[in-house]
Image: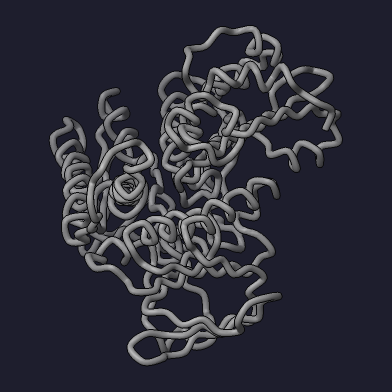
Length: 457
């Protein structure tokens, strides 16, 4: 016999648990389903564990530079087993916290197993059938492992299996020059591995402006990371105890050998084994669940939140999905995901903080724009820390004076860029921000300076 709930939530990623708690607090009887580890990607193999590893890599890098600050440390040695143990503890604490939260929340029933739709408002887990007046799909995504010549003949790692690495690869080959690949590449270079990053496109992180791509490549090159671009016709083959990758690059050797291979070429949604067709839930060509601006699917009473809807793919956008859905359901709000401003970071060191449009995107709108740019070598906080790589850049609409977007590649850039968020949501003229007084010495204190030096773009 089916168990009936007011709401059934599939998945315990960033949006599922807070939605369960919010609905349960409003008096609804809620079921939440998890087939694996509680907490989803962010907690188990995404943000929390990777940024914990980034922190260990930064400590090793700073220790090697200690003499620059007048500090003698002696030889620096990285113990990868202890690095992994620290990561496991931080990640595990979050994982256990999410599970405890859900199991102890009144009006929430936790079910473990793989949920598959057997109707528009019913899912099956083994012998159990759960029915819900409302269903919420929060199943996240996983690493893309595309068909590549020879990949079936060599072992490869993904961002998930990298979480099990407690040793130092002699030479890590990273296929993919975007966010995941760059973070792991720099991280393991700082741990002591030789690293080669292979990108099929003409530049790293192709969604960013070209000056950002060039600056990031320079940052990685200064740390001894080899970057291979325009790497078409990739093919893998075993070589000794490791592997080799055949490349079709514009320059450089046509073959690179390594001890370990990390595949970082994108992600796909976990929607292929949910039985969505049994419910009539529409997906797009890439498998993402099609939703409207309020995250409703093609089936009334069913929502898709988090990475599986293709409308954000970040922890913070997943959490915002929860906020949008909960406010609309419980507070009769009319919030839309299209109202949010894109903001994200690349957590290499120094980090890249991004909000709104890139300069290239702003140009493509046909607007008359103003652009301000300042090297981090002219930012007092960066000079004091001895971390002067990167730059600040802000783009505004010349006519409306609204801030269209900002890029800060540099120390604290991931934090400083967010000081523009409220002004952008409020559609304040950039002059209002320009005239504000900020704390010295910080990175964000130079934002008004950049805004005072805008030039036609």
